[in-house]
Length: 79
Image 1 (cartoon, one colour):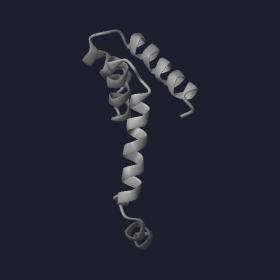
Image 2 (image 1 turned 180 degrees about the vertical axis):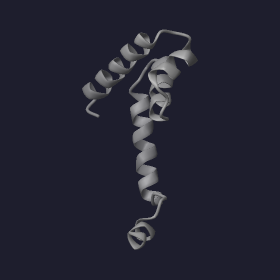
Image 3 (image 1 turned 30 degrees about the vertical axis):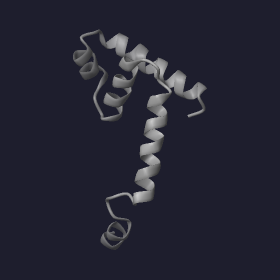
Image 4 (image 1 turned 90 degrees about the horizontal axis):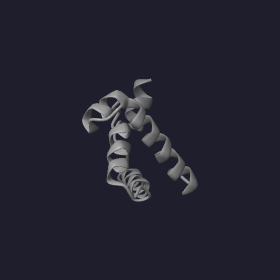
């Protein structure tokens, strides 16, 4: 297990990091609304719906609807 962990490493290769960064930008660019972008970023960072709602000063249900809209936009865009 230790040999495998050392071989794989914990850091992505520069190429993998570039691909991930580009995909991240593409996902966010598909969202035209700044609030949706914030919600998406915070969710990807691991914030809960409750935490995002507190940051935005809105109801948890509003965040749930925004996340559903984000998923629909990304699905329709082919992500």
